[in-house]
Length: 294
Image (cartoon, rainbow, N blue to C red; front, side, top):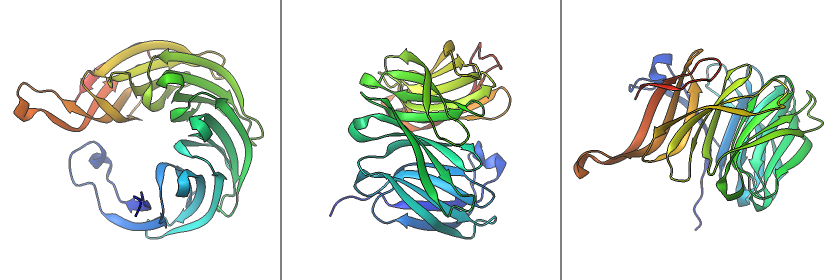
């Protein structure tokens, strides 16, 4: 019998303080097993007050898009619609909303190439229609992290040829009819486990792992039209091991990165693998990255 990664949607009630405090997180409300064969590389966004859109890799490695309705209290989760948008591969998904009924997906398709696709999705989730597709990377395109810059500009961090770290910008109109690459920057020899966050209107911060699995933060300046990408500041936050990193914005100049890594302590008895969190301050212009707490 082959191994299966079962696809589940689980609703949990969280308190704000529990997100960064090591305490009881909250109570699980309900769970829906929406795919009994496979469910990996998930990316989930909100469509409206009770409708959600999920991109994931399902049976036979295919790329799927599904809609669900979730009640305000989280008591019910109902699958509404499903679309198999790639029957070869659908990994490293990163999904963002373009406008009220249009969505942009970055993912890894056939031959591990990098793709962008747009979809129109009805507010109630009843229909999912693929609109446009762009193969933006023909050598390798993995570890995607996609962020919206303004109404028609998007920035993507990903691992390209030989896992080199890249930043690209694209323009996509509100109806998703076209996807156009604008600018590209190769910022590191390796750039995996990408997590990209917007700092302000033209500044972005990226958490990623390099060729030695060290953990890095970098800031970039990108104008609203995406015409240029300029690296500003760098900070190595882990010199041992950093994998599966995730970066979040806490307030206007404070950020937290969490990752799975290795604590190289003074004695072998206290050496350990585990999950870590560090906080940083970054000004609006991205000129400095300062560690606060770990």
